[in-house]
Image 1 (cartoon, rainbow, N blue to C red):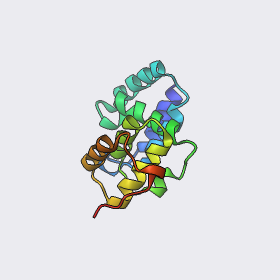
Image 2 (image 1 turned 120 degrees about the vertical axis):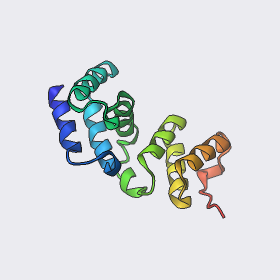
Image 3 (image 1 turned 45 degrees about the vertical axis):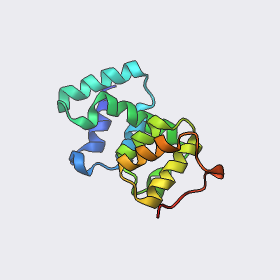
Image 4 (image 1 turned 45 degrees about the horizontal axis):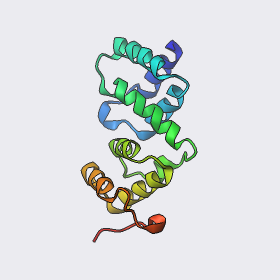
Amino acid sequence: MKKTVNYLKTIFSGMDEIELEKSCFWECGRELSKYSIRELNFIHELLQENYGNLVVFSLRNLRFMKLFYEKYKEYPSIISDYPNVTWYMHIIIMKRCRIMEDCIYFLSLSQLNHYTSCQLERTIIRLNGKKPKNHDIIKRE
């Protein structure tokens, strides 16, 4: 696990929290997908010893990195296909959408309409279970 901690440190070295890229979260998620939730807790503790309370290495964020990779591993172009979708928007989608078809629908909708994270979450809640047939993407006027 120390090897994983060193690997994670390498990925994020030289970046501050503002400039973190989704590709870093993807790489970390791939590494973290090897571990159970219990082991993630231990990795989190090791990272806290070295980085203190850096938000990027919070236990919650480590779990989302793992989920991000596991959910989208069959869709590696997800990052480049939706460049305007932020990390937080991905978290919203992962939390609110169970099936991949819904994830892709809301990623596309967000990209097309330049949603903020608040707009995205409201739209998911409003359309939950009422999405157009065939997931036709709706451009807002």
